[in-house]
Image: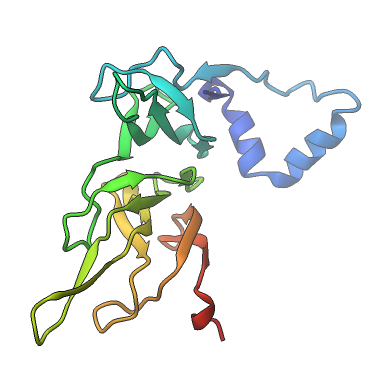
Length: 221
């Protein structure tokens, strides 16, 4: 996996902060490039020779990466699985390419799902590629898990159902992941509704994540 190097910071700003200039540069491609344009160089974020953090197993496959203005990269990746190796290790990773720092972990398979979670559920997959806010360390990803909530019948004390197997998880301020939205039903405890979350996006300005979702037909007016 490679991204534009932090040595070409003007390239990051031209593409992210100055869309008009970026469009102009595309238009100029048929003619002469501006003399002041910096050359684009590339740095390796990870490749199949890098060991996964907390393991000796190496990377094998990757989702598309997301990069902010400061060359901080987030991406989903996994190791190879198999009969001898066991199930693949699947994490959402990060790396600061401005300093060429170490590969970090945002969330990982088998990690405890953030609250609300009264079942001890853990993540089992991250089906969509992670996103990051362009000017901060706020990242967001979709996560799948075991059911995170069991509904108890107050009369009998028995478990009625177990729900909540998908959600959007984010890292405010670049810290530990928290639940942005989970597909829990409408109950007195949760003022949300069933939905199927898709790819998220993150915005620091309002401290929010956004995403596309799907409601059951019975809930659509």
